[in-house]
Length: 137
Length: 137
Image 1 (tube, rainbow over the protein chains, first blue to last red):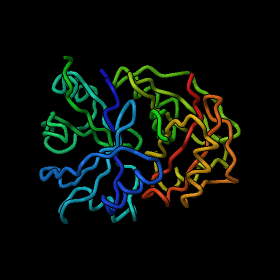
Image 2: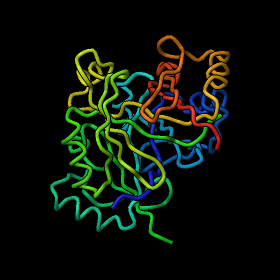
Image 3: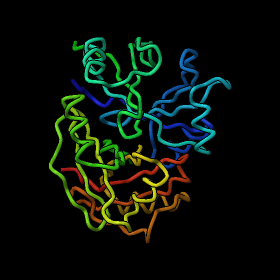
Image 4: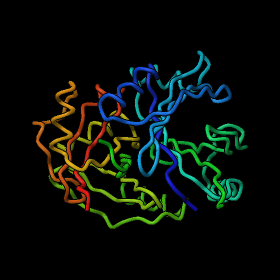
């Protein structure tokens, strides 16, 4: 079922400073800042040769990431995102095996314009897993 | 400076159960269990098409991962590992820029037989970063 690791997401308290740090320290290549209203976050991607790192800053006080930042001062590792070729089929299989999907279980549109779901971290030793629909081309 | 994302490491409280869960839920392909005495961990790797996930269980009470597991019941995301072609050059550059290396600053041998260092998470918004020496071939 599992495809590529699409990205690893890190929460930061200051997106601009964090992006600059990755550029200055590692010579990393970073994207422009994306604002994802529906997910309550601002995002910068760092390109690696085989995948990406996603830096996340909460957008507004109602952001689901705000609570994380209250618990983890300065930030921390937040989730990992893996690709699946058919997100509805993957979701239905996972639910049939007893896994829990966050929210209402219906895919939302993620940072790359593809449908995504999040799995309950309690089912995977505390790790928050995002699945992103990336059909074969 | 940055090469591939070599792996993302997740701490788990029961390596055998966690490996089985990834196999059963996602049909993931998992490695045999490796015991890394020097690092105080037991390890299982999960292969993805473009990188790997490393499941870590503390080995003995003195393991550096034991404290993490006390704080994060059941487990959680622990570190990410990126490849560099020359770890001594990378370390010296990073230190010159003010970054801190954990331990005595000298590389240790990691899970793949290559020298590795760990950067201080306080310098990267709470994320623990491992650098692994993987020379160009």
